Length: 166
Length: 432
Image (cartoon, rainbow over all chains, first blue to last red; front, side, top):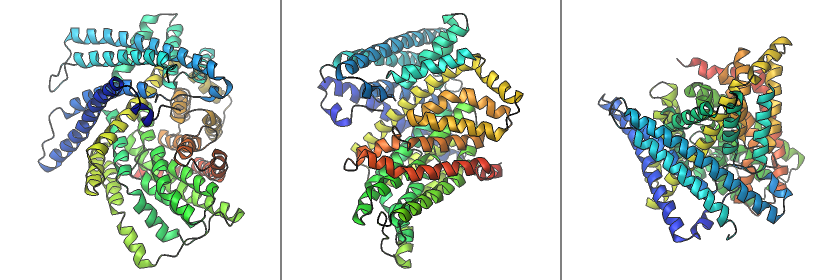
């Protein structure tokens, strides 16, 4: 349940902060959009008796983008829920070694997941899957999902070796 | 049976070795699934793909980020001060009055915020300085904030209830309705714990000043936006005006409008609220995806079925079963993060509950209560961690000791809720 705090992130190199900001702006815009869309949908339904066409589908796809754009951010900030009881039993060096091993294991898992989602994306694109009402192609969203998971894998690798510097 | 237990043990071992809990569940779930299918990794990978994809693209789950966003907005709007002032106006002059006011203000805040951590963090900034001004002991002050904060997930809206609802396919609106009375009961019992603490140490919670009725009315008027937002959002969901997701969207929008009106929201803070909520969402969804993968593994082991048979064969009384489950949770909750604990064990316990003919809504309320206890149980209760971070001047051991009477009150509430299911089920029963 520990994580790097906001102030530490501010001391990170410029490119790290920029990467954080790009994904942060994307996630924020999506979340803001989801809120506004839901609000507009309900208001239009009750006031002019005409709900937004396909609001449901758009929300679904926005949800996907929000979660997976947020994933590298969470990984970078070290906000994944972790039990750190073992820290009290280990010395500083053993702890660093363990943290590095865990980061690499997470990177491997994320790389596997990215590959699996990439295959899924290819299948979905191959069928030419679209949403029911607005006919939005779903494939690119799943590719985005795979790409963000891969990015998270890279962040884990980066963190495994950056641990020494900090 | 053995496979399921081995999976649970392996998952806990990985988590103990600092592997993030979501990842530990995903790793063991995937490997376990392949193992159960004679090391057929293709089907295991297909199961993983489906879980990741369908959890990501899920309309019902969009209720989670929207309620988180609503809570973040109201926390920024600075309404906590008004809630505390209003509660103080009514009970502040009593012994331990400020601590009781803290609990009541937490309950009020919980009615528009679905997170216990946010509730405790927000109230700490308001209530702790006031209690210090009246020379409250740190023990009582910290205990009241940490324990009061946990009401955030019982009183609707509640992020945990949403996740429980999605995970077990229980109606979220019903869950919300079910949380209202147990939340009020919880607040009352926490106030009783304040009184008990003051009886033991009269200097811990001296009374504040009596507030005349005219000012009480004024203070009440200060909290109308909270009442309006609660009635609108929860009332709207309860009355069937809109779905839980729509209610969350309306609530987030209303909270934003409210924060703008109070001039508490600029571009910077708007962005910060959105990013913070987005990150919390991503973090929760990783746990959810990990838990779903793990659940698929547990479901193809014989563990849930064996447990059901065992209970049926020996004719164990349902209340005893529920009590045993709760005892396991209290023990696990001292060491584990609560949401992961619940999601990890639900695939095993939930079929048992349904099989015994018990109401999933009622069990959900019990689970929320258990999580509340877990949040304040030393050494790793999340709310205690939040308080130690926000109030560095209060020693951790003081926080630990201060919270004990409140834990006792929560355990008493759990017993009452088990004994009288009607407290949880009466309000959802009135819904159409």
